[in-house]
Length: 187
Image 1: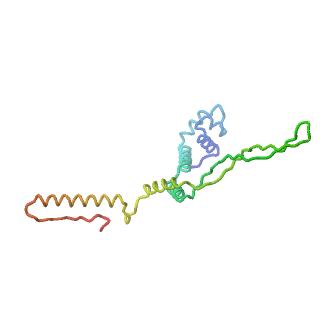
Image 2: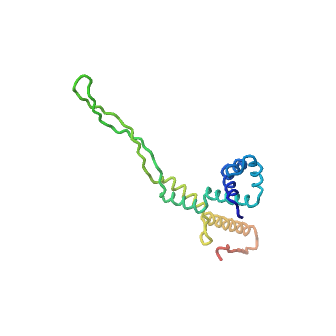
Image 3: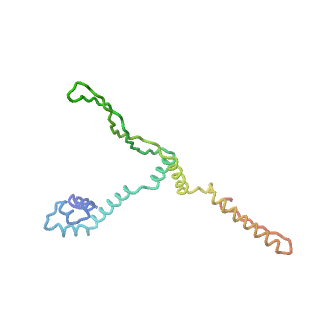
């Protein structure tokens, strides 16, 4: 995929503007032929492939990847992310004022607004929400079972036992057979 400098300039301009005619003019083609050249350039496989690859690269740079999201959520959970808070404070300033017509001076207090920007750690609520989201995003490994999995297994076992007890009471022979199938992670 070897493009001429003009074709490369055309493709780069087309990515910016989406207008083939204007891109052809910007790339250095004549205004008279810009419309047909622009249309023709878009049908050339090398130029189309170049445009597609550049757009894909641009999209990848714009969209956060899973690892980046997990790292950010972890920083929020650990309260390592900071926020900027802007406060407007009124600071008193003493001005010296000379009286009109006399030699007396007076002091006048005026409030000046001062903008103060400070960094604060994320809130505990944000950290809790981040921890909750992380726990939903990160799947437990095979060695680890979640609380919900354990709870579901216990409920199923309790239901099986209750069913067998019911069958035992209904049957007249008194024999009890319990089949226990191990789960995959138990073996």
